Image (cartoon, rainbow, N blue to C red):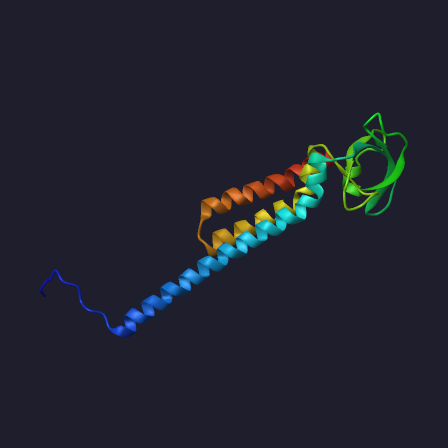
Length: 172
């Protein structure tokens, strides 16, 4: 058996098969990256309608919860500014209502005149729950499709932190 420094020529079929396999790997990686980006953008888009008003609420104030139904609570909204007077009835998601004994800091949403979101950390994290769920899904796609385990771990921890933080702040 002789050792030669030259390389053996592969057949045309084998070279073609290797290039097709490489193209399939590229398509798999690109499609997994696009799916992860789509999930992340969808989660951020869904979260923005609740997080945006909670962070930069144009009309903020307080709500004292009067009565609660199965999914939402009703209460009286008092604007924070001294230039605005009067109260009006607004609706608030049941998990955000908290205790009836104390007022809840809220902001009016732009897409509903009678819908409010909490402006404290619990309200921001509750509004970001779609983003947290999307981060958990992105972690699965990144770990399984792209084989990027550390990036997937960071995404999963961020998603679990958002979901766990919202649960902890609203439960205790």
